[in-house]
Length: 222
Image 1 (cartoon, rainbow, N blue to C red):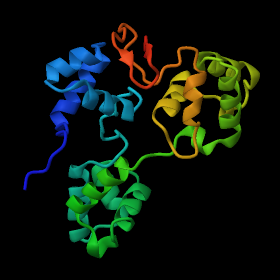
Image 2: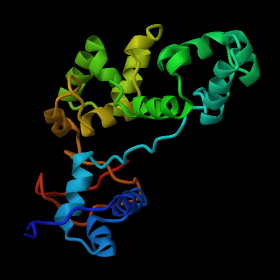
Image 3: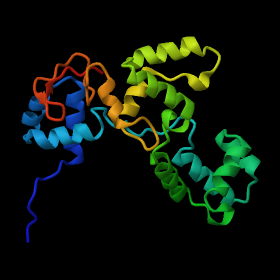
Image 4: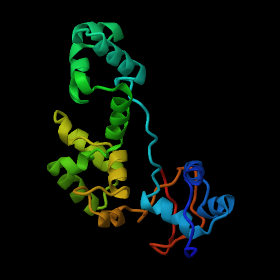
């Protein structure tokens, strides 16, 4: 029996949605381009507060699949950690950690180790304001006074010039507000922003429709 309900969006449609949103297109324009109702489009954007998910890229410091295959061949040949490390231009400690975190010499497999590394990289990292209680408290108190994230970031650097643990960029504050993280800033603090915004949009764009959550016309700057 066919299931009823609104169809979701494919990965390709979501990628196109975020590309158009970042380019400054309005919700209605995006919905027309994707041949979707405005509700599903708004739902995708609202879920992340209008902030596009970052694409996953391999760190330049991370081992590549080719390097892992060289490690595997070195193990099979009975080479020492140091010899394997010299062969791929890495430190012995890097090779040692790589082998031990992936089952040791007897169980190490390059493809499995590479896949595990990618999965580990996908796990969400705790945001700065979720891990630093003092900084979170200061930022929240200033937001309640309707300070802008830019004002807060500048004030923190001026007030605590020698304490980098109490420095945070305005972009991090925005991201923490709009992309909610457990233990971070409360969602209600969004409404202390002077614009009352609930999502972020490209700086060049003006939201042409009423925001269905706040019932106001909105200009959403990025």
